[in-house]
Length: 118
Length: 367
Image (cartoon, rainbow over all chains, first blue to last red; front, side, top):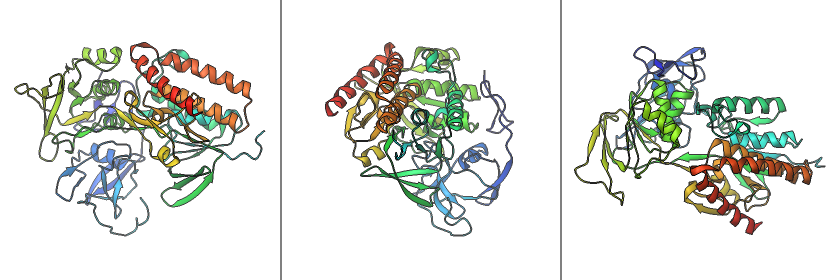
């Protein structure tokens, strides 16, 4: 009955109801400078979960956070994306070369190329 | 009939909103369907189980298949669907204030507004509930069924209602291990069909049991559970530790009311359907002229009932805007109510049926 996760990874390779995943172009995003393989169209959250990333940010008191609602309501999963802090990674699709950073507290604006985009 | 009609604006492209828009467009009414997400369908695409009801309710069809069909219908009808569009206000006189792609703001004068904004999952506060690895059941469901990634390897599910057991089964299908499903009440909450499937797969259920805390450094490493007495107080000495890396919270949903409140809709408190929700009548009209409420926004139920409520509002709105005659409106409304009533039958449906009847009785007094 169970689906099969790709070797050692967290991507679900085959699924008893959903079958094989649709082919998607691979893009690269960077988490605090480290390259992570992502699938075009997926939100940042799922690329990070697939890569086994356990902590998305820390609060100003140093408490770790990851994700909670997964549909853009709760803001647990916010990170700094292309210089903009507080971006909801569960509803923001990946883009080639995207710079994703863990923020502390509310984070800070870094401007740059992504300024004004989410 | 309604030549210069302002459009009906439907907020939320989930099952309820899609059905409302489809009814309106089929009647020839101008309709704009807005959704804050990049893709339409709301939460339908993460529902990979078969729906209940009779054939006319698409029973036996999986949620994502229904979603695909509704999207195909809306595409074929040429409905004006505006994605990445957040509605941030409803102005008096039905001006719908929308922000597109977080950059362009505009107000659309609407002939009527149908709010289909859904619901959000409830949290449950216990020591450690903010740790990475604690998430709503819907979050885990989205990850495995839509994005196809596993949030963890070994999962504890808190809450045995339909969401809890269905997500438990879907986590098994995705290749995770489900350590247990716990339930605070003395009896299980979900449909027998779903519960039995999970039980047969070897997942233990613990009734009269709560979570005391989640433990771990940078993420969940274990959960401590305990039996509760009749007053839901933990019983000392019954603690048990489960080695899990994920804890899914499935303790109900609350209607998303932001826009209904902004529009001035009168609320009613109905705990069986998620707490506060806008008062409405049998056409899904709220207390504010021209504003309809449908789906989970109007009381948390299921996608199948949400679709029928969407149709009710779409049918009446098409009539109110002058695109549907009174006889046709009444006939379609009655047929839709017939389907709704049969969806609210059975042991579980009766409670919802009674709760809805209370809302409608109050709503009628207003109308």
